Image 1 (spheres, rainbow, N blue to C red):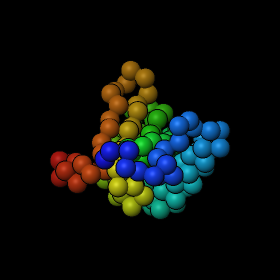
Image 2: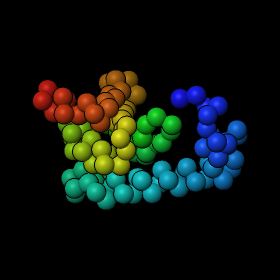
Image 3: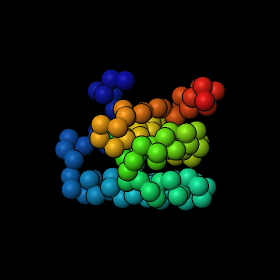
Image 4: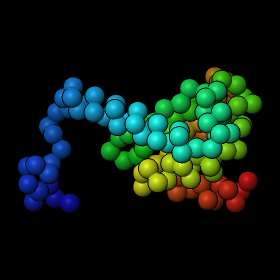
Length: 122
């Protein structure tokens, strides 16, 4: 879309203010709470054993999970379908990135739109 046809109010700001950053942080926190409380007890327990957060940028909502050990990493990867199903209602474009402990495995990243194919692969 050619930006010259858009009214000035419809264009993004020229610079990001401190207020914009704080609003984005609050949006990420609130979305994270909604996501967490929509999960079942097993998924909540898995997430609670990890360091996780949601980030939002112009293209994607991304669930980032840092796992404390390789066993938890594999439990999270095996629960990716449930995680994707809970993210899908929150954003049309969402990704999940699972990070293992350093030097234990490679990071795993999948788009929520790819979760159904992953489910069939499992």
